Length: 119
Image (tube, rainbow, N blue to C red; front, side, top):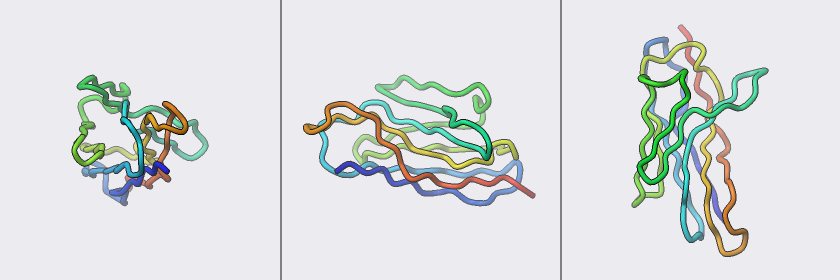
């Protein structure tokens, strides 16, 4: 069984920084794309950033402020967030496309971690 476990969400003041982590565990052949999505109250879930084989994609709203990185040895993806704004407040979800013997290639989601930007 594959699991994604996130950590690092917190309450932070505007202009502050946070680092989110997401570790994959379980039995699988390969982790393909890893990324971060977020969902603010009353809004749809939206892409924040993805990383695969060195190709990185960011939402326009976070370019220049957020940095996604990946440690393949630890099966972990990170999201370094700087210059945080109140509009970054949301539940942040880790996502990974993982290939397993049972299910083939499919998307997995973490449980979410709350990021609140407020003074």
